[in-house]
Amino acid sequence: MLGALFRTISRPKAKGPSGKAQITGPVRLHIGGKTRHPDWKVLNVVPGPDVDFVGNCTDLSQFADASVSEIYASHVLEHLSYQSELPGALSGFLRVLLPGGVLRVSVPDLSTLCTLFTDPALPPQMRFHVMRMMYGGQVDASDFHRVGLSEDFLRAFLVNAGFSDIERVQDHGLFDDTSRLVFEGRLISLNMIARKPVAAG
Image 1 (tube, rainbow, N blue to C red):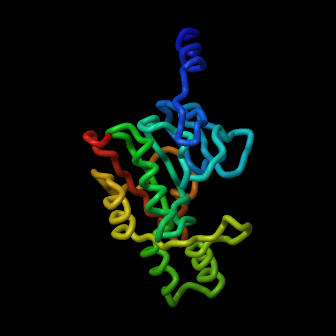
Image 2 (cartoon, rainbow, N blue to C red):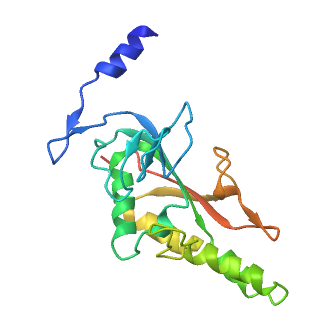
């Protein structure tokens, strides 16, 4: 056990394009997480006691190629612009994942939210809450949604980034977070799993 700990501490880090040391892993990366978990490392834009790496999901340059075995990103991707940031982030995810590595994502399900919003039986205050789930709570500068994602939209972004074996799942079974949020009897999250092809570098 001590030998394994020493090897982890003393493992040399690769140098990235900027000349800074890179994490060589492999790690399981929880992007946007806020709570410590023994099996996962947390990347967040905001420093905190349980945050292992400070950074933005659109720039994973602190991680070496194929240094991450699994990525979990819950209610993160909808904050990115669909023209450049979202495709760029997914390309970055693919780069850092090991061949065969797993990407688990959850986003607000635009199809479900549209169905809820147009339900004539839903009171105005409830429809306003659905609208906030579409566009973000907007409680701070980062709490705005910049893209709406349905299953076919997200699948297309994942395919274009190079992911394969894409499937929709009911629950990732990992964290008790927004990916499990039920509103008016409907799961409001689109939960999907994708893999980096084994043949990918």
